[in-house]
Length: 158
Ligand code: DQA
Image (cartoon, rainbow, N blue to C red; front, side):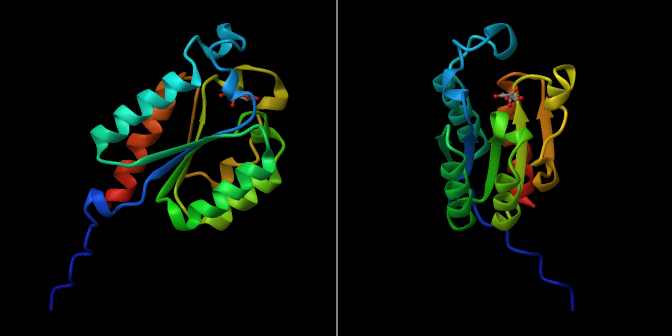
């Protein structure tokens, strides 16, 4: 007997994707615009909403300057979300707790950085969270978030 094809849930049944931003990303637009650009986080969120809609995905956002708040939200994502786009800001380079939370969430996660962290100071070259990510996008500015949503849409449609 032919194996039954796995049923792909319609987009309306797929849980929303979580877009998480870590410390200082609330300062986008004002903060070192020569590195991070002039768009604000509100602009980035609006672009993500438009792209998510085009892709048939729901999307939820959290920005926090607090590591524990990010850990709490990743834990909740295990039940509430289908995938994660994460720009952990400076916690990228310091946080075993975020790595553990992402591993425990067991969701596809895409790590995003606005800047090309490999072109910058050596301490930015290492990411604690990359081992928990399906992919990493760095250096493409806010477009990185949209590419991450596209990647998740494809993964979740499988
Ligand atoms: C960043 C890069 C990090 O090194 C930095 O600490 C940030 C932003 C980026 O988006 O390029 O806060 O994650």
